[in-house]
Length: 114
Image (tube, rainbow, N blue to C red; front, side, top):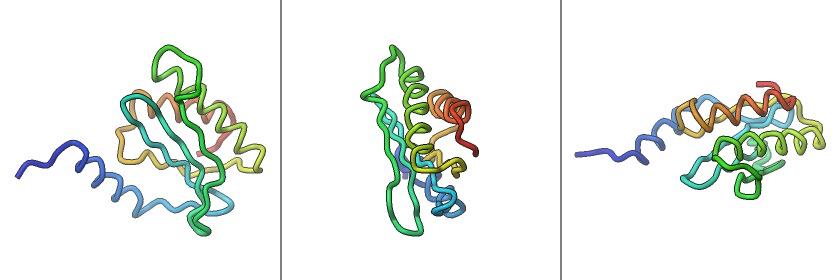
């Protein structure tokens, strides 16, 4: 039985989510990456509410990495407007490299702490 790429990612994501929980004081920064865009959300798991969300489809930039960095800055501005400074990073089962790492580094540079 062969396990495909998406099943492996979902298994990794379940392992990550077993340990990470977002609260009102420290929401979960959830990241999803597709072939064309990156989507990020700030989620309060205790209430089941999305506080802020951003998509790199609207961002300016030539490469997916550049669009992710711009999106991270915009999400940090939305978070600061809501009074959120600290978050828990949920990489969504994706490896912490490339676009995901660039997004995380840009979010930290924009003022989010994780």
